[in-house]
Each structure stands twice: as structure tokens, then as C-alpha cells.
Image (cartoon, rainbow, N blue to C red; front, side, top):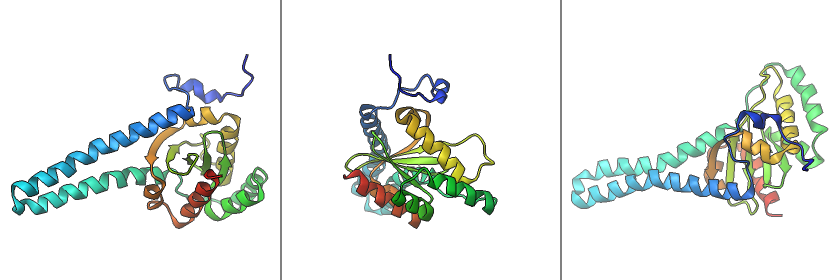
Length: 212
């Protein structure tokens, strides 16, 4: 009988397959195919328009623009899961920051204080945990998965919400990835373009950690 801890929130999503390295690979392949399926028709339409009639170049350029914008919008949605929100009250946040720091190592603590994202190494890859979502950098650093997940109590300061999510991740990493809503999967460079400067630094650190 397994004694591994299981997140109770899994009971609310019984239809979801539990996340494993295999399902992550499949999810990434599906996401790539889905994106290509949206982009290729616009690219093909642009090429056909130019071949049929050069006068249609402006319309063809609009098709090319759509083909470029669609993946960028997906990446923007992924970046939104770790976008920082201002703390409503500075004093509770300072206290929560100290408690969160106790859960992290020295380097991870400094990274979180400067970027707002807590780095956590797991079996599925390297995580960056924010107050309302997380980024998973797969081993090798060539693909990222973005998840939207939150804490029910919206009155908690940001660092308390991060601590709750971090503890849930440590309790059941696979369950955490299963319960969270998948928002984006793709190349780190595409996501990086849509992140804030602080979050970019955290992503760079996670990619370096994913190479070890």
C-alpha cells in the first residue's frame, strides 16, 4: 500500500489524468500540434494570396501577422500566471516574507526576494512558484509548462500564498501539476519575451538549475 501523501484537492478533478513525466511529454506535443494547427493555415493563406495576385500583399501580411501573434498570445497567457501583484498591506507581507524565507535555501531565498518567485527542484523539473501560478522548467531546459493555481484565501499576503503553494508542491508534486490549470507549454525563449525583467532572471536561474 502506498504511503505517499496525496493532495485532497485531487478529489475535485477526478477526470484529470495524474501528471507524470510521460503525460508532460504528451501535453507538450499536443500543445505544439495545437499551435501549429492555428499558425500554418494563416501562413499558407498568405503564400497563396501572394502567388495568385501580388496586389493582395497587404492581406498576406495581415495573415503573417496573425500567424506570429497567436503563439505570442499563448506565451502572454503563460507569463500571466506569475505576474506579481502589489501587496495590499506592507507589514503582513514583511512578516510573511520572513516565514517564506524559512522554507527556502539561501540562494532560493535571495532569488525570491528579488523576483517574487520561489525556485524548487522536483522530480518533474525545476519549478518557479508565484502567488497565483507556477512555471515548470523541464530537465534540459528546452521546454516550459505554465500553470495557473491559487490559494482560496485572497486576503493572505503574497508570500503566504507562495508558501501555501510551495508546501502543496512539496507534498505531492504530481498532484499539484494535476490540480493546477495548464496555461501554456513551449520554448523558454518565447515565454521569456513576455515576462517582466525580474521574472526573466528567475527563469534564467531555473533553466540553469534544470541543466544540472
